[in-house]
Image (cartoon, rainbow, N blue to C red):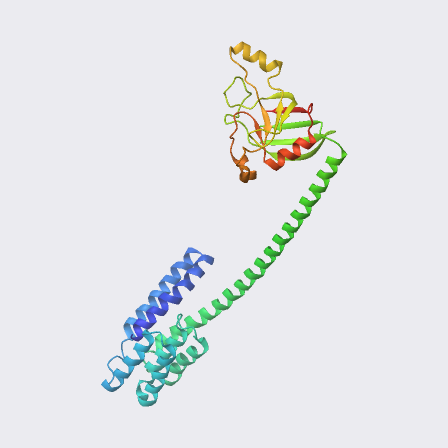
Length: 337
């Protein structure tokens, strides 16, 4: 792999991502300048990078060995070979220093050393004033200083990101701890409410898919619910899959329900019956507040993600147990649109 190809690889592997990073921070003008600058570097290599290829045949084979080691990823071995070349063929010193500088700064070299790379290019400028690698070395010095600065910036930014990430994790842990405290407090309040008596009203808000247990005007607990498969509007007739709207009471309960436990509400009321008569239909009945269908309790809270009943109000099995304890027969049930 010749100096031209090595230098082009450096540009494609390292310099272009650096420019892309800069372009995110700079204006469109900055992007055009970086592109133009890159073109100048490549052009300079095309003009002068091949000027030392016609070396003596004895040095050429040794260069090929060093290049082969570089191509295989054996960067340390390649550097050692170049050190042998400069001792044996001192007239090729500028080319050797240039290629060593490339290896020391090569992005895929896990042991890259920008300082050693700079020393190689600076030595070319100092000791080989007429070298064809002089202009390329100047460009590489500029490039390495630029990359080293950006690497420091990136490292600092990564450190800041890690610090912020740790702070976020700490805050998340604090939130989780607070949530647990709130849940524990809610359980205590609910337990106290159960000991203090029963709810005097169940308020169901269909649009919000929400059921609230209320005692003396205070909400004891709120539950997510699922409704009938055709939830909009009041129930009018049997089989319309609508959940009623109006004021009712719990008039009975069924512990052997197909849905774990059911609290029957007093639908239809007189208003519902009148509407059905006017429509010439049966108003239907058996509207319940119930749990999940037997055998499917594992669904848990996720049941409320869709409206799946035939007009009833559904909660989880654990929730219907709580509601049943606090809402005796005769409890008012208000169902709002």
